Length: 575
Image (tube, rainbow, N blue to C red; front, side):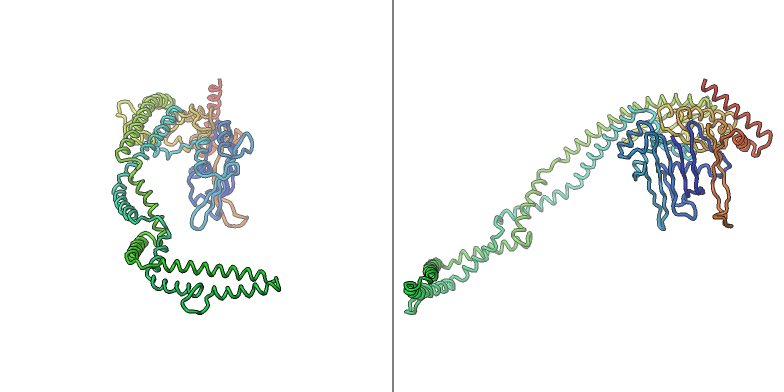
């Protein structure tokens, strides 16, 4: 339950700290006094939507902090979310709202740990349920009614709904895969034709050596200069080894040098290494001469081979222009499109296979949705009976109520449209609740609906914002007793204008506006102040104000009677 609420610079509140108690907590005050601001702060600290208007004029930062008691389930959930516990009894939730020039920013923390909106939403559902007049809109929305019905149905229904959600997700994936396959089929065929042509072209080119172009270019140069190469190689042979003229060759000169060095070494063996070098040079020159002779004799003109080389080079250059720019890149591209072509030819699933899968998923979805519908029909019957029993003490014992379930296209939440049907008077046709219920009837209906969830541990704290609108007298008393009944199992916070309801409170707060001088100067500001009415005199005076508008003797007497009546009711309930 909510133990403490601290508010700074929120709407008309400059600074406020409230400590709430167990059971029934009531806030009263004049219209426009700021009662709903307190509830707006509770909503905001738990992640509700806010705008820049919630920040108090003259400031750029609002701070909200709520301290809640925790139970073992909530403790386990906090540990699961990796949120450290401050103690075993409470959790502190804070939200800082900051206004900038262009937008508004807010940060939420749980026990000092920064959390996202999803975690705050989950935590909110575990702590507080807020019922306000605005929920009349929700009563007309099938999605909200479906959630309420499923929540009332309990674990079995929620589990079945989760199975439907999984089945719907599987169906969506199968359907999307089929549609994508159909959409991409034309593109696939076009790509298949293109890759088939390219693979065939590259296959015929017999690409296997990235260095082939360099090798062919070298061969072409050799074939184009056979005569020159023969002549030059012969000249090299003559200069190194043997020539037709009688001039000495390199081998002859080196031989003479070797002879002279032999003679020198006989007298000075220090030159022995030089002699060895010259001998090696003689052998090398003679070997080069023989090799160049063989090379020159092997050269011969081959026009046919030259044409083949030229044609192959032209082919490879064309390939490189289309798939290169280098031959190595063209070969890499060839290997890549072979894999792509294999994937296109061996497509994982044909359209027929995907159609079959979609139908199977659809059948599962319909099967699970049908089971969910059956559970909802059973739950609807229970809710109808339960709600009617809760409405009877609220002076609505003649009403008829029915949960209408009509089939719709299957979604993640099933294949049902939910409508609450209502007839307030005997003999009148049953119609959608939002079209026929008056403001007072809607208020009582919402209260009775929440009373149904009370037995299912709906939330630890229930907040009602003027749930008594449009009612008075005996009906107001019935609402007071119903709120008291709810508060025996849960904490209840209620904003009310009804003295009958306020008299039933375990803790009573008066909310009022005050005009103060800012910082001791002449500038005046309006602030909201909240007073805890802890003694009988202040409570009696507030009830008298609610009943008669002033503390006249008659109003005071009426207020005293209300307090006595409330005390008697509590005593009867406890015994």
